[in-house]
Image 1: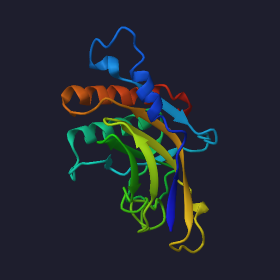
Image 2 (image 1 turned 30 degrees about the horizontal axis):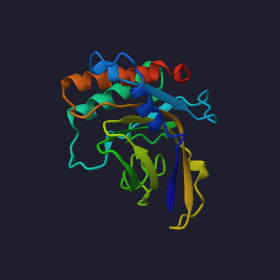
Image 3 (image 1 turned 90 degrees about the vertical axis):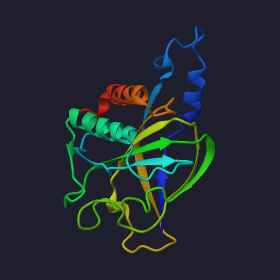
Length: 214
């Protein structure tokens, strides 16, 4: 079975374009910072009140990271804090309840047209087992995306177990809609200053997305 990630229009080329648009040139690293958010035209957040969040940042590209880094913790903690600040209820992975959406975090460590396979070790089987934690189904997801090095991506994926077929096989495809996406780039060293900027920019993602307020 294939889990297909229904991505919205890619924002990576927009990030690259805007980075080069300041005629006066950058005065500090913060001047390079760009935050872009996009929401699916089909997204309806009115009846979605809860969220889950795998405590993991996926590093896309050439990396040997296996443990959470300081930057990972900044990303995860900031996303969780912002969702709570917007009055979403957090559902723990060992909770039997199914979250309405799941927050997914990525850090791009290479510049490439990237064919990815099985980032999550099987797409999260949110809510289809004892607790919603990932992975539950041992099936991979696959796709091709263009990424710019140093990009942090946050996504809110719809939790749609009702769309799963009654029986699953390797030939089945199940669509997992991405309702909202935020991107920011310019993070290559992950030092303390970049951690500060990452936190600031992730908070900006949510600030410019008032439709996520509960």
